[in-house]
Length: 587
Image (cartoon, rainbow, N blue to C red; front, side):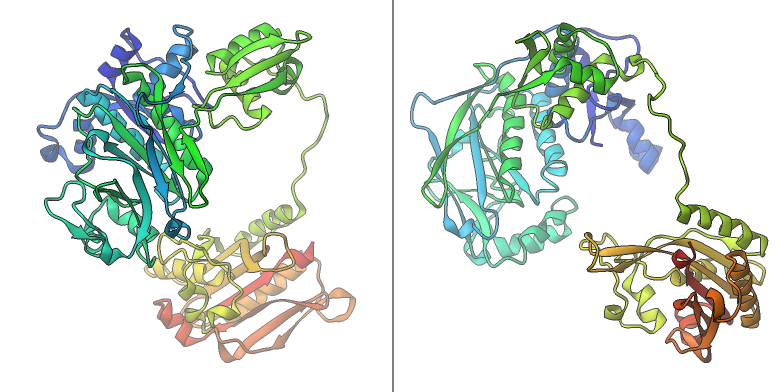
């Protein structure tokens, strides 16, 4: 959930009134007001009082915004939403207008097809910025980049001072060595290759370099004079940088997702067209695609949906008249009116509400406007008794008895490194059938675990100073690739126990197995669905000290004394024996 920081005094000024205390408003599934602080307080908490000296004491409201409400990510959208919700103003109507002269044109070349093939554009004409408005404009772009734009991977926003440029504009892709310009906040020109090296140490921009750095061509936007506007999604050119004094803004959004690019453009222009000379009007721009087709943006499309009042009442659990429901929806920025037989509500979806996709979204907004706390609690009409899943019930029963046997339960991460489940256990990663994480944040969370053993051994390594013996167990899921399932992987519930002491303690682990089988009502022997252990080998176990466990005619796990190499790789110094079985077959 994104958090928006607003200066209290600016918020009160925009609302046209002040408040003596904080009042929680709701414009989404959660209350908006998440707390208040100041820049000085934030720095003091993070870096200490010395660093905080001289920082601003201006009160900031920290507001939590629902992730799908892109129109609430800035002061302008929040204030507009609150004023409409409190019925102080009517929702504005956003209009796309054609320019008096020649329309600004953005031409996309076919070289962009394999990198970032889509682009949209618009112009905010005769806008008036103040320092606070300018800061809000920049911050909205950053919030959108982190949210719907998925850290610029799907969409990147570029804003430019139109008066410093000359159209038409060309969006193309070139070799990095052929791109040279002065980037934002730099004093000289650099090639794209040089910029990528420079920004590897930039705390802000280094997170976006991977999007294009391995591509043979980099995207770039030029004006008719060859001036570089931007190299999306990395940096804008310094030539067309916007300032507080900028009057005309050219906005371009490039990306790999055409729909999201259009949504992002609509949000930016609707939020800040309020400051244009002709309020809530946006000048159109023409975008020409490589196939020759031409489109005009922004779309600023209004659409209408029909929802029956009885459906809303039924889904929410209230009894409101259609007129009241239409009023509630209008307060949520969804202009509504009752039509037809008196039970049908026509809802107009504005371009700022891209989160409204289905009728259920409209029902949710009606519930929010009504107030979740105002919905009367009722008993369900269907009488049901909840039951625990058999596998979970068995797991709980085994936990109690494992603890009674003197073992301590641990809970370890479901994700681990490739080294933990392969190299340290003497296996090849390809033989583990592990599910890999496509973009792991750290080397510690590269794959889903295929065995519980590494987690227990790492727990012992972190608790080596504890009195011996250490007797630990865990009952949790492991994940294995399975092409026969719809998701390509399957979970198995495993029980794993380890005994760590000055002697291996194989007999203790063996005795634990016998106790588990006794509890599961599985008799020893191969007859009548019993269990047996047979000599086996495994790279993780000491030669001649490993056995495979067979129960009810199938292999369910292994037990044995761990190999010294395994013990050493997990930074342990004493012998260790382990047991791991799949408890699924015992249901």
